[in-house]
Image (cartoon, rainbow, N blue to C red; front, side, top):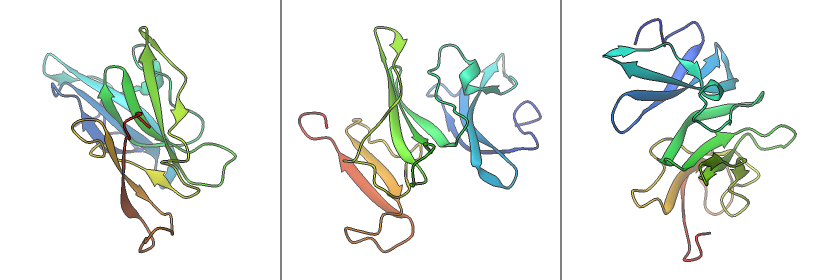
Length: 163
């Protein structure tokens, strides 16, 4: 992708916009996968522009923090984004969060809660949202409910109440 995007830190987990003109990705400091921040680059007139920190793009919600965001967010729609977040001061490695836009204003990010997240590492990749937006496929290190240990794949579907 060239020097506008590829740098000495690691750039991983890209996800493209539907029109193919925007790429979202995670940038890590070399050798440290606990330093992830989200970045965005856009193709203008056939040229990929320098990558910008997600937080420096005014039309996107602020989700980068001093702790780790990993794997590119899942942009479910222009008003709903899912992302993985390593919250400081808690024992699990990461949880799945969402941020919604209401009345043209991005709201404060919120955890998807204990029905989906566990006390273990829970995260999703850009392919983890069903086409109808009602099911999430996640990976988790939770040892219960028939897990075979390590990272296993789990699915969560919304009930009629949207939970």
